[in-house]
Amino acid sequence: MKKIFLSVIIIAKNEEERIGKCLDSVMKLKKKYSTEIIFVDSASTDRTIEIASKYPIQIYQLNKSKLLNPSAGRYILFIDGDSILIKNFVDRALEILKDPKIAAVGGKRIFRKKGESLKIKEKSTGEIKEYKTIGGTGVYKRESIEKGGTFNPYMGGQEERELCFRIRNLGYKIVKIDIPMEIHINKEMDIEEASEKAGYFIGVGQIIRNYGFKSITRELIKAQYKALIETAAVISSIIWIILTVFFHSIIFIIGGVLIVLALLALSIYKGPLKVYVQLMARIKLFFSIIKGFVKGIDKARSFDKKVKVTTIKK
Image (cartoon, rainbow, N blue to C red; front, side, top):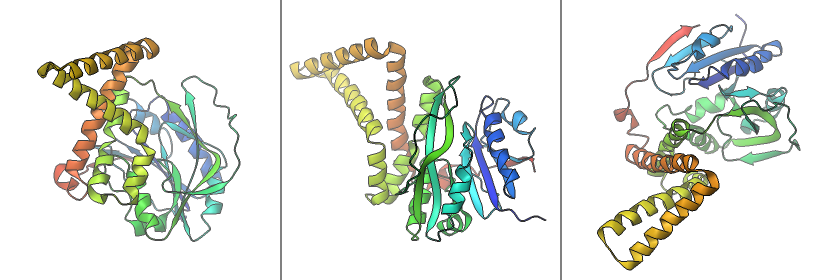
């Protein structure tokens, strides 16, 4: 049996419009390397699995959006199902991973709207810089993942950051190359999509609960400060308006009026639907952080059911 050199793990849920392009882009790696491609579906309800089944890959389906790592390669590429891998990124990443001190390599994420040209016009320097985390897509040394303890399937989000933190604590480096790595096709930000993204902030609460004010928490707050500040402003405004109803103080009334005027101004500038979606997302984000903080990481097993895996195609 041919020894696997590179494992590609694709994570997706309800990506029938994008999964084909993602798979087409990673299938090209088979021409260069001894490659296995593993698709982990997080209980899709559309045609995602049907489309993926047409490709010569392994397919597993989970009952929840958890990470699975049934791979055998010396190196592992993780990529989301709504992304398209850029040619030559993996080649460059594997060259860099020859350095025994480097555990994982990421690159530049190119964002495109649906229907927009996929031609890459962004300039790149090729510079290599050390980072704290590389996000959802990147190439890892298998040995670093095994030593670090692999992805924690009980994280509600920020699992890459938490894994990279453990890997860095072993003495490894995490780097990014300033070259295109993937094209990410943005989805329309409706209430459902915004709510789903806000739900990933459970991981923020889990990290705060379990790591306190260690470097990983400080790094996380720095990376997410804009969303956190906006959430604090929304929650504070809601509390202020509630207080205005119960306490008819002139200060509360003036504050309440200013909040309403600010919302009206935003609605005129951005549109009422967009403002509504953002407000609902920030409220969901707040409760997600609280839920994650209560849940923690170590105690997560008592909250979640056992992860069920169905082998669709092997």
